[in-house]
Amino acid sequence: MSALPQQARDAVDILINPLLTIRVTGPLPDLEGVTGLIFTSANALDAYMALGGRVPDVPAIAVGTATGRAARALGFRTEVAGGTADQVIGHVLDNGFKGPLLHLRGEIAIGDIAGRLSAAGVETSDAVLYTQGIEPFADATRAALSQDRLTLAPVFSPRTAQQLRSESMGFDQIRFAAISEAVAQALPADAAHRTRIAHRPDRDGMVDLVTDMIADATNLERRL
Image 1 (cartoon, one colour):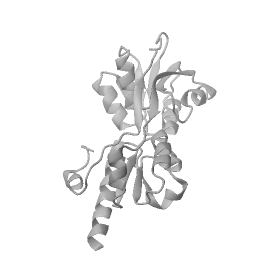
Image 2 (cartoon, rainbow, N blue to C red):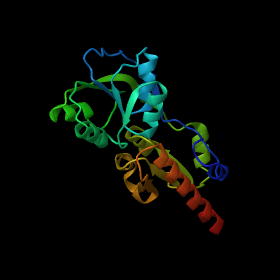
Image 3 (tube, rainbow, N blue to C red):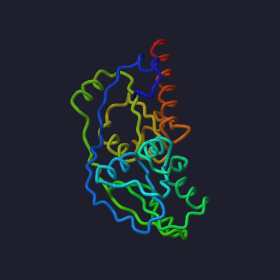
Image 4 (cartoon, helix red, strand yellow):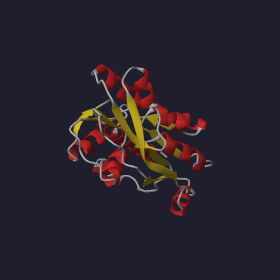
């Protein structure tokens, strides 16, 4: 939320309720012979470093700008794809990577990057470094939602969207800001008219979307 403009933050009450718990599990994979790493989240980067991973002299392909910034800050030689699993695959194929590559990820991931790249002729394996446990709405969240106030929920992953689909039943005042079409599709089936999708599937795209939705909600409340 700190990335939002101050005016947007001042216009709303902010309630933080993570719906996923990240638990680093490992093991740390062997990088012998690997010619490139793929990171599709900053959580994978954090888990890799927490397990004692080194920064090898091979390219690190980051799914989007936020993961790319985090990888560069750690010293990786980073290339950034467009923000989705499909764009990671396109980046690898368009830029002539030969493999073997290694996709470092969580237990639950979308896009089958390793399988699809291998099928396209670029040998790619994957390593699960962490699990993503689900969490319910906290009591404070349910209390806030019971006030029947317009609520905006930014959603960054299909796993979180699936948990929101369960937890948000009966709370029709929630408006969803989805980072991608895949995330939007995992939200409640009856929430399409309450969901907007970022114009770019990365942090900057979400900042723009949430800022716009806050402005729209503020203007609506003023008219009521």
